[in-house]
Image (cartoon, rainbow, N blue to C red; front, top):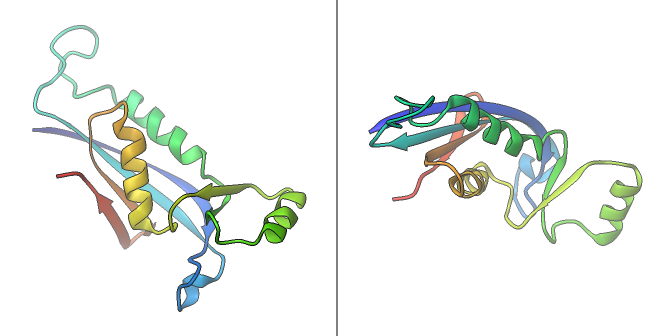
Length: 139
């Protein structure tokens, strides 16, 4: 099995509604997304001969995905009152609503599913800090 890996980062804020601890408050991270693509065979012909896929294609997809979350407040649908959302939007804040609790584990699965639509993704690791990450890969 051949593996290639790339990573990208984005900065954003989030909070965990209903959590009993510091993470219940809005706080920020520099998230690092590390994506591994895999193939048992390499491209046999053309300019990409000898590759799993072109690193530039993998990097472009990962960076585009990260760009959608960069410098936004990420929040779970239903976790903020309508009045709060309206006030934040009125102030011009960038908001990103997701249908899941914004944990590293859920982000790893979300990013995996997004990227696996078009790329041979094996796993996605999401780092909240340099030392702590969650990894998602399918069986």
